[in-house]
Length: 198
Image 1 (tube, helix red, strand yellow):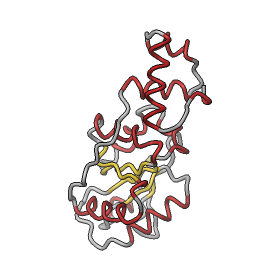
Image 2 (cartoon, rainbow, N blue to C red):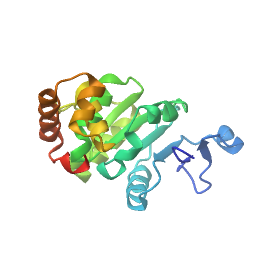
Image 3 (cartoon, rainbow, N blue to C red):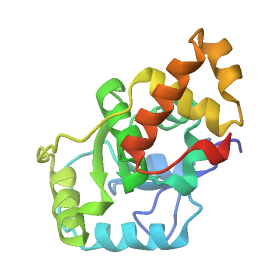
Image 4 (cartoon, one colour):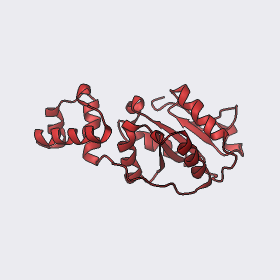
């Protein structure tokens, strides 16, 4: 599967939700809680621990917790992942690491189907509090984090696809200096150099 399976983690059965929902999932009365992409067993174990520590879940829509970390950047190189996950009609919650916070903020500002962003850099205590708030539908305290712009996101994606500055300049109809300036802003927001990917 291009985007991978999405399995419900609410019980030991782990019914498949995507790419096609299993019949058992449609009959289940438990709130659906999914983790995507399912490539990091430690992340999955951590999310399951947090979910199991919460006794009240008021939303009937279900939740997809997204491992929005730099190591998974290849899953987010275009907006197809949003379409894929949104097809479940479940709430999409991004769990962002420090390097991905600016990109997560971009999606929170521009994509209404992304319900919330949780910042893992805030520590376990704050993350647990925010999980509880998400599950009972309370608003989170919003910190004013920096967000990538649409152009910055596009330059980031093209750079990670091994496009050089000249290619990006041509593709986006920008002069070379503008591309360099945009890349500098991206690096400032994500806290690391991206030139090595070009």
